[in-house]
Structure formats: C-alpha cells, structure tokens
Image 1 (cartoon, rainbow, N blue to C red):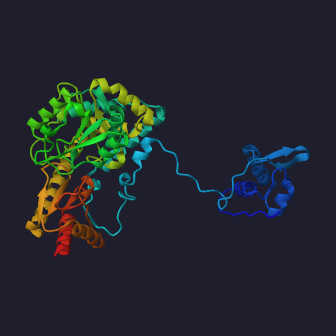
Image 2: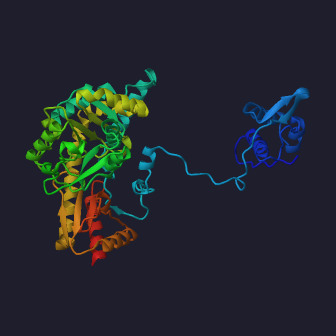
Image 3: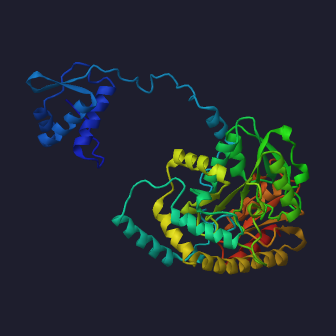
Amino acid sequence: MLLAIRRSGSPLHREIYEALKAGIREGRFRPGSRLPSTRALCADLGVSRNTVLAAYEQLLAEGYALARERATTVVADIVTPPRARDAAPLPPPRLSTYAERLTREAWMPPSGSYAPRPGVRYDFRYGKPAVNDFPVDAWRRLLGEHARHALRDSFGYAAPAGHLPLREALAQYLQRARGLHCDAERIVIVNGSQQAIDLAARLLLDAGDAAVIEEPHYPGATVAFEAVGARLIRITTDAQGLDPARLPPSSSRARLAYVTPCHQFPSGVIMPLERRLALLDWARRNDAWIVEDDYVSEFRYEGRPLEALQALDQHGRVIYIGTFSKTLFPALRLAYLVLPRALVRPFAAAKWVADRFSPSLPQAALAEFIASGQFERHLRRASLRNAARRRALIESLRQHLGERVTIAGENTGVHLVVWFERLRWPQLDALIARAEHNGVGLYSVAPYYASPPARPGLLFGYASLAEAEIRAGVRKLAALLD
C-alpha cells in the first residue's frame, strides 16, 4: 500500500494517522476493508512499529477504524463527507439578528487599521500611545512583584467587578482628581471602554428603544447601540457641544444619551455647566440614563481638569466610563465604569457572562501604580509633554498652512481637528494618499460623521510624536499642498 507522508515537521505517528484518515474520508479505503498490519506498514515506511501503533491507536480512538480478531484493523463503516469538488455550495450561515446588524459591511473595522504603516515616519494617528512617556521600568517591576505573589497565592477565578484594591485606589483617585461621587462598590473593571459601552447597550436598550448620540460621533458607540436594535437620535453639536434644547421628548422612548461633555469627540468642544445641568434634568424627567465617556480629560493644559458630569448628578442617572488607553497604553485593555448603585449588580452579572473577569495580574500592578502616586506623577509628566506637542502642532500649522486651515479643539485631549478651507473632499482624499506615499500618516474626520460635513477636515493625533517629528510632518504636508 502506498501512503503519502508529507514529513511536515509534525510527529511521524501524526503524519501516518493524518494520511490514513484522509484516505478513509476520501473513500480510498472503503468501509470494512482491512488496513495493513502494523508490521507490514512499518516495514513499508521504514519506521518503528511503535510509531505505526500510535497512529492506529488514534484512528481507533476517533472511530475511523475498528479492531477485529487476530489483531486485524478494519475501516469503520462511517459516512464520509463528499469531496469539495462534488459538494453543493453551502448556503449563507444562519445568524441571529444581532449578528446580522453587527456584521453589516459599513460597520466592519478596516483590516489592519491599527497596524503600523510601513514607510510612514510621521504618523498623526489618533490613539497611538506615547511609548516613550510611559515609565516602563517601574511598570515592569510592579508586574514582576505581583507575578511572584500570584505564584504563592492563587491562579483561580476572580471577582467579575474587578480586583478590590484597584477599585479602592480608583475610587480615591476619582474623588480627589475628578470630584466623582463613588466608592469601590460602585466601580466595575472592564476590558477597555468599548466593553463598557457594549455592556451599557446590552443592559439598558431593547430593540426599538432610542439612544441619543452626538453628531459628529464616536463610531464605537453607534455600532454597539445599533447592534442591539436601538434607533439613533443624532443631535448635531455646536461650539458648546450637545444642545439639551434639542433632546427628544419622552414619547421618543429614548432610554439613554451617550455624551463626551469634557472633550466632545472628535470636535474637542466642551459642554458648559448650564447645558450639563439641563442634560441631567432631561434624564431625570424622562427616566433615561446618561453614559458619560470621559476618555481623555486627564490631559488638560490650562487650569485644572474639568468637573465630570457625574459629579453634578444628584439623582443617580449617570454611568461614567474612564479608560487607561490614552493615559497609559491601549494594550493594557483596562477601563472602568462608575455606576449608580442600582446598576452595579446587573453590570457585574453581565461582565461575568461576557468573560468572567478582567486579567488579575495587570489589575494588581495598576492598583499599586495608582495607590503609590506613580500614576498621577506620570500624568503630570505626560501632560507637560503633550502640551509641548500640542503647541508645536498648532505653531507649525499656523506657520506653514496659515489661512488655508482652521484649527479646532479646546486645550484638552491628545488630538486636534484641522479644517481645510480651500479643498474639497476628493482633493483631501488624494492628499491623504500622496502624504502616505511621502511618509506622512493623515486621517480624515469623515468616519465620525453620518454624512461628511461641507468642509473637509483631518484629525491630528499628536501624543506619539516628538516635537521635531510634528514640525517635520507638517512641513511635508505643506509642501504637498503647495
């Protein structure tokens, strides 16, 4: 018997097993036919008898073969699938309504959208971490120390709400730095702010309910809300953010409003106190929730960080989301919810159903990083560096592009929006392509609008670039425009 062995680097007994299994499944070894004896096959292939025995034992264990009297092995009477060339085309997979909503082409993230771009030296990508700002050595020591403790303690399951010392450290920090009303029992640790938004969508919205979102918007929120069947009520922001006067009445069945009041994404405008109070009053009167995504307010370059909307909430209507993706690094995949007490149990239960709990080791390290004061020292240093980067970007844009652009965005965050006064959208798209060819990564604001605005614009992230790189990148951009 001729047996094709690929010799691919797998164990030899596995190669023999795979070859015999393929012959059985393809019908070359018919049901009831006798397989060669182990002695004959090991002589044929020039391998040890133990190797062939191991292959046969695997065939017997999986039901492809049967052992008969006198140590013979025969092919089992099994139904083999048709060969690919003979099989009828498979019908489209049957999916749930949720899956169908979620996998619409327009919603799918572009392939490799977060991967490094070869040849792009000056990458103004928003959300790219400032690796050089992070105290890597201190973090490595903390991880090592807590890994040693874990070896002595337990590798078991943890609480779905998160590591208690981390929640305690966060509660103290948030009370001190953001003025939040919270304690450890109201905090749930999640895998990034996207999981926080997804949990809020699943727990607070039924199909047909309405969700208020800002326009322009954060796509991660709109996808999560529409995936559960919610209707989006888009409210266009102005120079003061979302206008509460345009919020829908109770008849709209709006169950929540998703807002970024301390730094509207992506425009960067800040919601004033009067509008914040009006938004809270709307939520109280309409029995609605407010999801406050406070994604980057730690980086404010003039004055103290702004008071969070949650700090003004007197009726338990605000769900506060904070993240470490911008302040530390995205790969950490840790964020948190500060919840009204009535929502703690359902959110913790939903977290348990989703993935049981977030990884314990980085939570333990982060707890000490915050409690020891290292986190706030890191924020102060990073804020100074980001302020210098922001100045370099604004100065370079004004110097090299002048009146051709309008710069938008308050003195908070890690990005600016730049509007081009003399270009049309096709020209901007062509500029982005030319810039990439010349080593400059540029990013359109169009994905953050349901319909592209009249003026074309770019979103400039600057946290990952040095000041010299920012200036060089803007010079290259100006040369391409000229």
